[in-house]
Length: 175
Image (cartoon, rainbow, N blue to C red; front, side, top):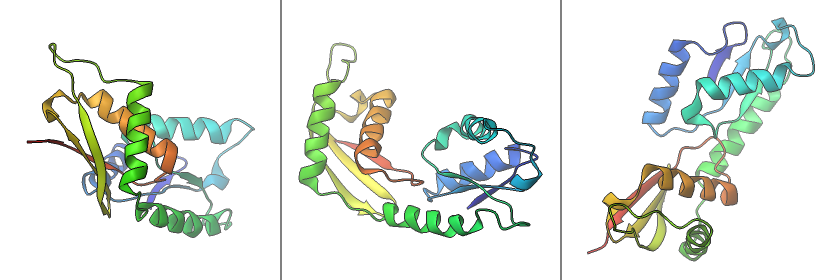
């Protein structure tokens, strides 16, 4: 759980800790405490969420909870969401399902060629679940642009969730 003070919003220290969480490939739930001290209207929570997501833009897949430890407001949700994140972290997807997803993603948005060469995807598999790791076998891993890697990650998340969990995508050249 990454605990943020609602009055301070996301500080540089919070971002630094979030970076460590990401480097270690740990799942996370962002918990905004002292929500009872914030003056609110109907747009406050979505606006705070937007600001938090902007400050932690490298963790746009994490759930954000607003609680008050003093009043107990929504504190019970914290454990429920943390357990859901843990469940999604250990979710395994069959190779057949992953390859159907890959074929669909390639059909919807084929990768761009790089200096006249085009990356060819052969297959994908999930060898590990903690953290979820996906290995894509391609003709040349150097041809996979980071934007296409992000696109594939988004397709996996769109189909299978992985709430609060970083995904590792590995691209291996097939020999």
